[in-house]
Image (cartoon, rainbow, N blue to C red; front, side):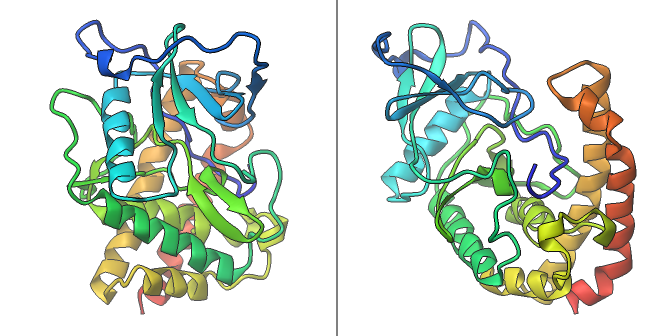
Length: 292
């Protein structure tokens, strides 16, 4: 992963319960003559995300009705950076519009350390949060996000998985956001803490990607916080939530590795726990500078 990501990156892909009403997502059969391109990336959905012409097909789960409602709300609000819902195909996959651009799934983008790119990503993220106002997560639909933490609950439906891999770029301009599987009603600062973890990033210096060596993480968080117009108290909460998030992710990824889910076993064996703890120590050591 380009930023050394250590997060699940994709939501629960269990099939919807029989009681889940997906009839309103009905979609005509896809033209089998069109070739399917298997897209890389992800840990749970690896190999199951496909591009068919101008559409993307992905597995659905019990969270899908809430996500589809959210994407339709964003469309109605005029937010142009999210996929549009087309429905569910005849083999039970959700069908979304394809967002053209470049996604950094298997390589380190050269622009990763560019502070101007960071600010543009923050602006897109801020626009997404603004467009999210007014959407109510449907009752009885479980959100897919597995790593909510104490103090992270709230009522604003957010993306909650804004890693480098989930931003669609056109050159150095972020033009879209993908993978809404972890959308859920949260405190917006939880959503921002996850994004800061990846984009500042909140990582130990020794664990930074070579493309990020030499960056000033304290200054980058200041830029991040300024774009999101965070008060000093809110900056402190973002840092606190990020620490709790690291603790929770340690549990989630350990459990998923033990359960043999996707690529989490290899991730754990590659030293995830040590990296997570080093990042937590870095965050604790830099808290005062980050929020000053």
